[in-house]
Image (cartoon, rainbow, N blue to C red; front, side, top):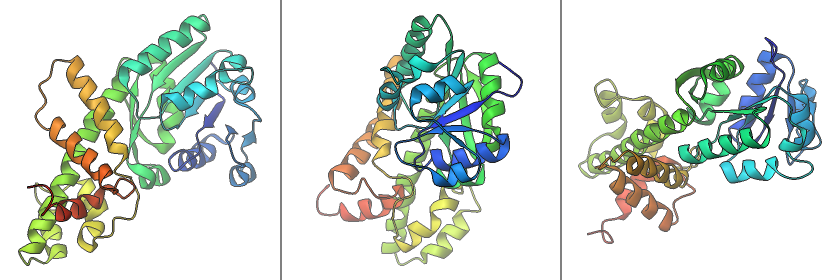
Amino acid sequence: MSTSPVVGIVGLGAMGRPVADRLLAAHGTMHIHARSPQPGLIAAGASWAETPRQLASRVDVLVTFLPDLPQLEELLAGADGILAGAGDLLLLIGSTSSAPSVRSLAARLSAQTDGRIRVVDCPVSGGVDGATAGTLSIMLGGAAEDAAVAASVLSPCGTPVHLGPLGAGEVAKACNQLVVSATILALGEATVLAERSGLDLDALWTLLGGGYAGSNLLDSRKHKLVSGDDSPSGMAQYMVKDLRFAADIAEATGTAAVLLPTLRAAFDEIVATGLGDRDIAVSRRFVASRDTTAR
């Protein structure tokens, strides 16, 4: 691969589009494929590929920001798929996925292509706001040489850190989601306790935010917690999948997790009560609504 690899991206949704904007601005050129037209990116200088095959044939590094591996599998297969067009290709998987499944996919792709396709997992934390601002935490797993290329490509989007072999990024993301889910539930529950005790919520979280209870999550969700606005930014339903992957890691490592079963049950209940499409700050509303149903 040349010192300046040709970059492509597929998966231009809520996260992928701002990532694409930053990659295009930094690298000057980029190839894209999507289900719907992307006139803004084309006007900014991106090159359109009609099919995943055409996209793969043009690039050295293909960044994917798809919901999960099944969506990637759809693009890999078939006469117009990535596999049909790829030469030597570094595939960067930005989805939050199962670490064992990522390793299995990488092994299969390597076998099918005589090693021409290599994989780095690169899930991110920071949400749409972080993608737009270029402040994502980017968790890399893979061979050192491949991770170095991935870091150079993705650095305009935030801080990429190589954490270990393939799958390490997904393990790190599962750990991240364990902390985020526990924190947002605690923040929501504490908000309900404080409100019902007559406290000024804005003053409370401003004060506690300067101590050990402070966090980036509190900073980003303070307004929502105080106002009760849980319009979606990071939807609560995504935690169900993420925590399932964390539970898989706990089982694989022989870890008798304390919090995971409770967190999984809570987010399953959030989805079951019809709140899964709300922001994770819906934890406040969820806790408040359980008075007569959960005792």
